[in-house]
Image (tube, rainbow, N blue to C red; front, side, top):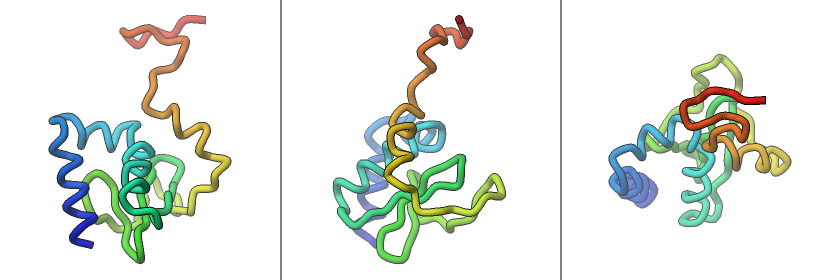
Length: 104
């Protein structure tokens, strides 16, 4: 566990916005980084946020977390079919300009 927490702390230190990013669209990317460092890492999803299970503990950009959903949904192990959508969660919509105005 100490290695996981040290890795997450180092990840947060990469950029001042990393913690915000990891909680606002970048949670799946945080999982992918954890998966690179800890190959047994599993993604768990509650329809709003991805947390990572390593061993019998759960983590996100904040560190160790309890698998309690903020949206009232149950966390479930994320299936590989969900991955394609998850890769784009941190990207603006293709039909949205940089000011957030939707076009089309």
